[in-house]
Figure 1 (tube, rainbow, N blue to C red):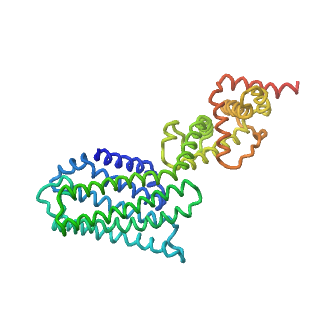
Figure 2 (spheres, rainbow, N blue to C red):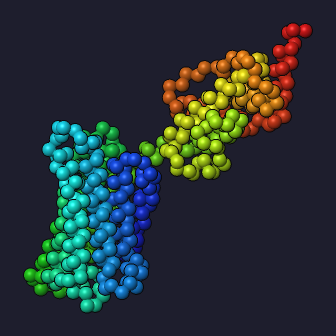
Figure 3 (cartoon, rainbow, N blue to C red):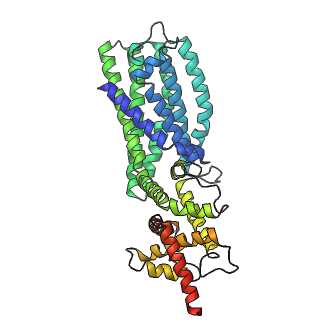
Length: 411
């Protein structure tokens, strides 16, 4: 059962690291640091699992899995300190509150301290640590050894500083958060850090207590397992706390993705008809939706601009009466206004394929009271839904009707 929680915690942390992986591609130290923390802890947690330990044990270095997970944890801790420091903006500000200045100083110092710490851990690992026989559980099997106590004290120095800093900053930020989701999320992350501080102190106390006072192996095992359960619980709380504030962003990202999916047929045909309208040649729907060149909200803004630019070019090909004819044709449609625009675009694209551009543009499409990109995209999604159902024959018929309407009054 205990092994199940090890795997569960590792999987949860890995899922969050994968979810936040796009942050690596953006020039945002704040988001990259957060991803680095999750990724580092995910690696460390996997190295606690029996399967990973067995795999690493094949390397002929006794207890190497312990050293590797301590390296991964140290890297994650440095990333967490950087994340906290960058949460307060640029460090170039001349005046900053004392707690912000202290966090930034600790974050800057953590890189040098981390390098020193990793070097010292490596030296202690190969010198003072008794590694004559492989250990099944590093802390339990090495309990009572002063070398292990020194080694782990050096390692726990970094979690001690990190949990204290992050616990204070996130608890303080939770009290000042403006919305409920951020307040709850930061509050849970603050609680998890205070739990981490308790875990760190308890582990150090267990190690040195076993050195100074003889403890039975069953007592040490009970204490170590209890603190291990405590550690896995705090990581799950971190995962929940970090996920709550992002639920709104995740919902917005999903909505944007769905809008891109619906707009794609309209966007693709327009940018194909007028090469150069888009910044890059259009690909298949799947390729466009899964690529990571730009964030989805930026891509949606570009697509709406591409569609607007292409529709402006269509005005030089569309017959003068085409929009009026489209409105008459779609008068009984369930969504008549977007349908009229969809029919106009479909027929105008056919005209662009068969006729030369006119010197003069026909009247523009009806103005809509868009207040932002989202509202414009929502309209285009309605247009695209109708557009994708219009057949070539229907568009040709509409084009012929509009041309006849222009000739009729002159006869």
